[in-house]
Length: 170
Image 1: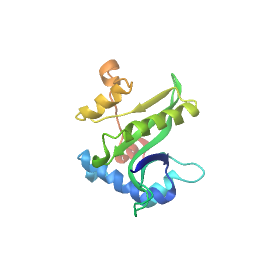
Image 2: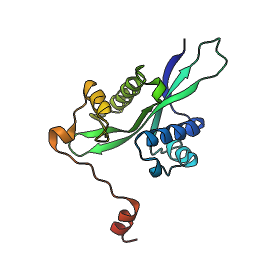
Image 3: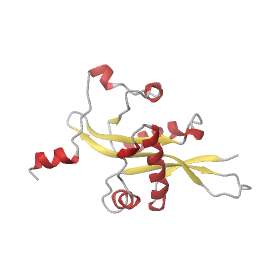
């Protein structure tokens, strides 16, 4: 019987993480928006000042099985700051391959992000969900998350690079 381990990603995982990012984008019907490369993931996630952190879900086969460990999910997160509450952790993506869902892997990733956030002094753990993904919304609510759009009317906005250039006068 194979077991699952949640661990911090290593540089050598970047190819598998990119593959999982592409699978998530396909699931979300946003494949055309993936612009990141394996090299960028490596440069931005590792080194002295990483822009992001990542947990991976790894299947550890039973000793008699010929294949080695392989990644079936990830949780990419980073730290943000709230002027009202201070340190926060933001889960940008969480993804578990379809055939491994329903086994508690997503819950394990979320619990580990919560642990990391608490260890770093965070008072909140934030994430966003597409409005059509009711299954994910129900899952997060069952774990204790509050829907801020529903409860407080918050809407999320984003400036794309061209708008940023215009704002910056470039």
